[in-house]
Length: 151
Image 1 (tube, rainbow, N blue to C red):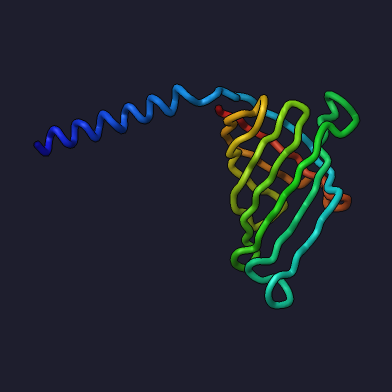
Image 2 (cartoon, helix red, strand yellow):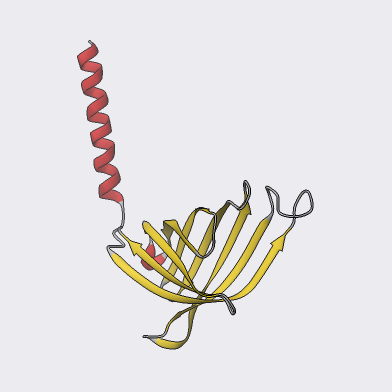
């Protein structure tokens, strides 16, 4: 009886994995390289005065790919909530001409960090992968963003 239960459980897990893989839309593999210009920054001081858990950063960027056009091709919105010390939990949405990408994760320093790409819409439906951000310039704030999409 025990072997039968283990066999059914293994078959269920294998079947669920097959169903999951067969139902995902394929977005990648692909790389998207963008530069940004920060256009808005808001700090919301919740709770005690000064940086404390629950404080928020709201950041907006213009998105560029100068190899395609000198004009901004989209924008992004970040919402980060401070957790402990300088650590924050962030969610970012990138509005691009052919859909949106959504990234989320934790970061400590905005000079260089990595977030998980957790989804998207239209062309980027079901996107998965990573976003690596590197600061290029402090003032005005400019970053290099590299999306590595795997599916």
